[in-house]
Every structure is written in structure tokens, then in C-alpha cells.
Amino acid sequence: MSRNTLERVLWQLSVERAAKDKFREDPRQFLARFALSEDEVEMVAGFDVAALQRIGVNPMLTMGFWQELSPTRSMKQYKALLGATDEHSAGFSAALKG
Amino acid sequence: MGKIVGGFWVPHDPVMFVAPEAPPQAQRDIVWDAYRQCGERLAELDATSVIIVGCDHYILFGTHCLPRYLIGTGDVDGPIDRLPGLPRRVVKNQELLANHIVSHGEQQDVDWTVARSFTMDHSFAIPHQLIVQVAEQRLGRELPSVPVYLACGVDPYISFRRAADLGRQIRAAVESFAEDERVVVIGSGGISHRVGTHDMGRVSEDFDREVLALGIAGDLEALCAYRDEDILERGGNGAMEIRNFALAMAAVPNARGEVIAYEPVPAWVTGLGFLQLHAQEVAR
Image (cartoon, rainbow over all chains, first blue to last red; front, side, top):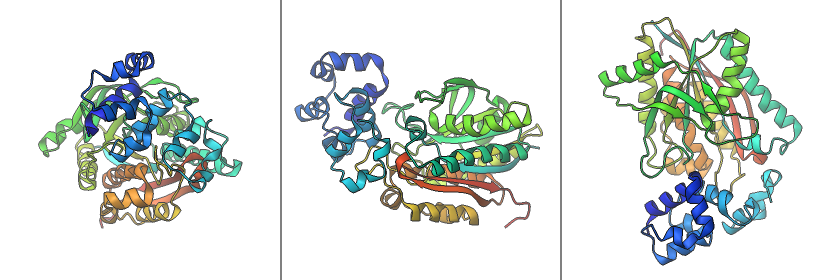
């Protein structure tokens, strides 16, 4: 697993407009330029934020990536994917979008 | 000779701007008023410049370059991350002082990474716009502000020992500064919060009050004794920012703290602590 490369990819997708546009056009073609395994490509293209965090990707990056490019951008869905319980989201729910 | 005349610990919570009405009204009022109080206290210190110690949130710096500590010595603007109610603008730096801190550091084996132009993020912009600008209005003059960034959000994190060293070096640099400068150091961050994790929104009041108690006591040694794994477990990844508190406390001569306000606000995902660091004349 390449945490460094994954963080490089997610950082670019969080801050660089051109990278975001290319990812939106064709995620797998954009990701082909990086030294990622097939599993890693699927993690990013499939917005599998839980898998990304399990291999050590910084949560600030997974959240930024999700908020910028995921289909729903829903923070409720993001937290659910990470396994958040109702208790985890209780106090925060008023600020959650979507 | 310049002088550090005081300091503050304050939060920099972007959710306040994204979801301003999420918490109960009483909590909102306390937090916004705490920022105003900090601004007024900053004016009462008759400061001539401010150093704001912030940290990156994996926005400014990518995997290609992750500085442990950095100072902005020239043009400053931002924030780079657009938040409603926090406009992007140019900030007047105290360039002479910032460059003096760098050159002084070279004599002390402190090799600052330098940004001769710097676009900061919300960790600088929030205290600048909510505190420094309030003080500027009260004083009727500009308060040039120097950005310092410590690696608190992205590993490898700066060590507490190094953060405190930097605070002491900044103090020595200010005291050897040619101008009659009155400097206030703001440590921006914390206290407990989780960013992007499954338990984002969990606030740890016991941890927050423990940190504030160390601020009241001026116990830099105990603050610097926190282990990263304990901070992550007890206060979350956002609480790693208490390194900024360590720098501010080390910079203020014989600092003793006074809590201005504390509110645990899950709806804003953070335990929001405001503390003034008073400089003491008598040596410990």
C-alpha cells in the first residue's frame, strides 16, 4: 500500500482545480498516472474513505476529498461509511449537511 | 529593546462559519463574545505587533513539502480556504521583526523555513479577523501580524520540545529587536476536536479543562509532556494543535493563564477554549 502516493493524489484532488476536472471527467484515467495498485485505484474512484483511513491516509484529506468530489458530499453518509454510530453523530448533527 | 507583553490561546473553528446557527444561542453568544474580549484585551496590552501561531490542515502544504515550522517574512494574504463571513484579504506583516526572528534564529541553530510570500489558512485568519482587527479598531492603528506555522495537522508533527524552543527563541529575538516593539503571541488551535474521523463532533471536556488548567498554572513542562497517542485518544487529531499553545506559553515571560471562556460545542465539533497568557515580571 502506498500511503504517500494516496495522500499525494487526494491532496491534489482537494486543492487543484485541473486535477478535480480531470477526475470528474474520468476518474480511472486520471488515477492511471500515479503508481497505485488496482485496489488503491478502486478505493479512490469508489470513495471508500474507510479503507483509505485504515491504511493510514490522513482523515483531513479523506474528508476534503469527499466534500469536494463525492456524488452526494453528504457528511452524514461520510460518517456512516466510517462506521459512526448515532451517538457519534448526536451532537454534531445540527451542523451536518445532507 | 522589544518585549513580549502577553499572549492568548484561542480556537480557529471553521464550522462556526459554515453552520453558525447550529449550537444553542447561549453557546454562540459566549464564543463570539470571547473573541471580542480577546480583541479588547489585546488592545489594552497596547501591542504594536502580533505573532499568530497556526497550523496547516493539509491544504497549504502537500506530500511534496511538509515543513515542521515556518515563518512568513513578506507578503501575507488569505485565507486560502473560503469560508462565509471570513473574506480573503491582504494582511500587513511586521516584516522587520519576522526577518529578525529568522536571522536571530540562525545564531541559535534554529533554521526557520521561510515563506517570503504566504497565503495562510483559517488558523491564522480567524484570530486575525476576530481578534486583531477588533484591537485595531479600538487602537485606531494597524497591528502588523506575523504568521508562524507548526506541523500539527499532518505528520511528521513538530515535537512539543521543539515548539517550546521556538517560543523561547522568538522571545529572545523580540528582546534583541532594535525597535521598541510590544509583541503579543497568539497560539491558535484546539482544544479537543476530531477532523474527518468517525467520531467527528465528539468533544472531550475533561481533556480540555486539563489543558486549560496547565495554561492557568503556566506549566509548560506538563503541557510538553503529552504523548501524541494520548492526545489522539483523549482529544482527537485536532487537539494536536496544542503544540501552538506550547509555543505561545514559552514565548511569554513567566506566563500565567486566565481563562476567558470555555464552551464544549459538539455542533461546532470542538471544545472552544480562550485563555490569556499574562507575562509575569518576577522570574520563576
